[in-house]
Image (cartoon, rainbow, N blue to C red; front, side):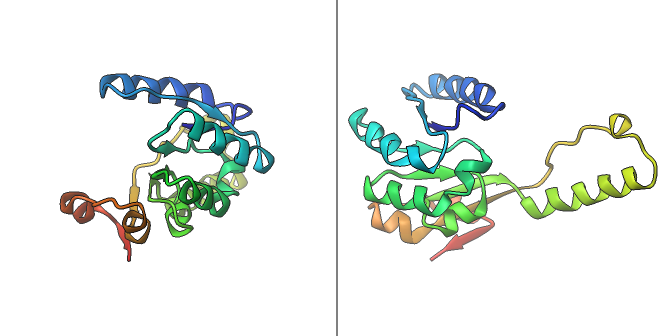
Length: 160
């Protein structure tokens, strides 16, 4: 797993992913990158640990490096999973996460309420309700992977 330790949500993401990995009988190695300057070292570390895939935890700094991260994953022949659609569009194997357009709409709705006088502390905390799955078949083919038809049918977008 690639994570930015400077992200306040990283610890929770690591705990949750470790629990999921244990339940699947997988070994999880956490590799840290605080920014673009750490990515080459992080991927080289994955190679040393004989990683078979990489999950990239949500982080604005890492998201800004989607193209570079996808290129490094391809260089090291690692299937890579990210959160945002642009990661799969940049060459990552797949992306699964909240629909950013929906989050932006909800943010605008909340800003409107605040501008009309609502106190931010009185507004309910909202969690995303719509998620999207984007699969990059070009990347799958380059890695020699076959994506099950059942997963392709569930995808919101398939990049061919």
